[in-house]
Length: 627
Image (cartoon, rainbow, N blue to C red; front, side, top):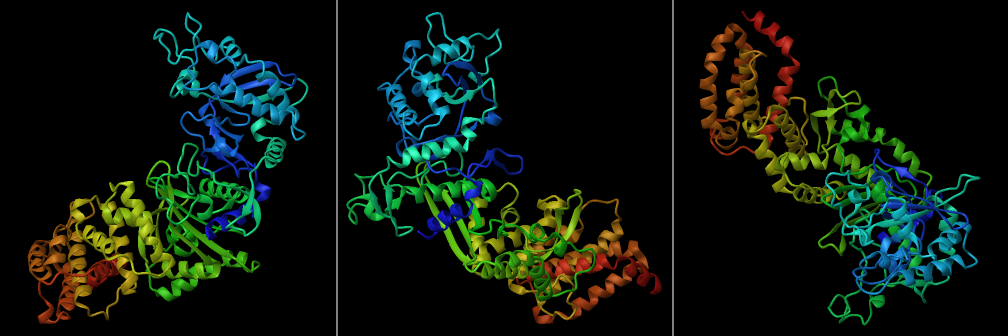
């Protein structure tokens, strides 16, 4: 229950944000929902006057469709033909008293009596505000369909029956038929109050309306029981919220409605014995979860990755790359010469702002939560950790200073490609390991598997490293930019274990590292001979896959293919030929064989190539002096 408790505490820490409209990256609006409220996409808006008369109605633009509505336990979990009206805004078949008179299809019992009775109890209670009374006075007249037809929002046929589809192809289709899904009875209607004398806050954005219903409904809750989350005795509930990931999400995290199966039977007699949670805690925890997902969650194929702190929501998330956390620290313009320890110190300073914010909190914790649903009705917590924030930041620093390499695929704020040193994002790791066409199911699975590597310092799964290594060793199957990105990410994954530097280690005499250096020199030599105008792959790149599996035999082929390019360069090739001879002489004869190369060869290849490109001008000078 710790994740529920932390979500509940997060809600309590952000009470000042309840009902405030927010927007993330210019996407749909969202808010921290009040208790006993949910969201629904509305299709029609109806305005009534303060005296309870019809004023105006229109079809809602889809960008403005999300509506905050009051709800009861029953209405929040209604399904199928069950009658459980929302307290105010609802589907047309619920709110229109004359729906059946206009040929509306009612599957079972007429839901309007239940709806208007419930609304009347609220409107006539001491907690009601004027807006509720105005809407109630209008709706109890039972003429909503008539007014919508007269306003040309809804349409009827010759028999005065509501139309479900537009059958006049020569006439422009009215807006309502563009938003209608599943028949006219499924159209969702929201209500507002109009005043000619003053500007009124919209009903679904009015804090007085929220408070009015919460106080009214709070008196109607069930029996009290001990809450397993807080330990306090409060009104409990066995109906918990859905719509966690979006307004159409039906999956629930907590549910015990299977009284005939074996969800809890055999261990408990009732669902409440398995988990008794108070209504208030359930509402606040679920509302906080919905708000956090909209605000800062990552969703991949409906799997939610969420990181937050109860007291400070702006916590660095573990799935991003080093550049996203600290561009100033990771962007490099010169040769990389510092060690991973030095980079860890600099990166730690860059995260100093997060440390400073946690210093004032005695119980600063970070929550990491992964959610997904196997069916449309059930959702599960796949991964949850609650960590001390200082401990969490140290783990982040450790990850971003161990799984590191030099990358060139990120763009700065001006849209220019930049070099950055650090760890890649887990989503980029997925594409490096499985290709850019990897499905979202594969991507979300890898992202989940990488979380323990970052948070718990576990080793990166071998199959992920091997997949990235094999793709990086097959450059001819990719475009150049994709291969360069795959190569640097594969080097970062391999380096998480090897702990090498990007700067060339001339004292490293490991066989695989030296073979990688040989391949890099052959690539640069041929590229210099071809010139910048020739874009075809070099022989070193073309044979790279075979070289990784049979290095000695393939090197003989590559070295033979280099001879025409050495001749073309003339004395300018002397510099690279000397490097090849020097590297080759350091490989013992008994190790110059066809044993497959490990990922270490990629580090040697990258570092040697990086070193040669960095010293391009000085190499030209050295070549000329050797004539």
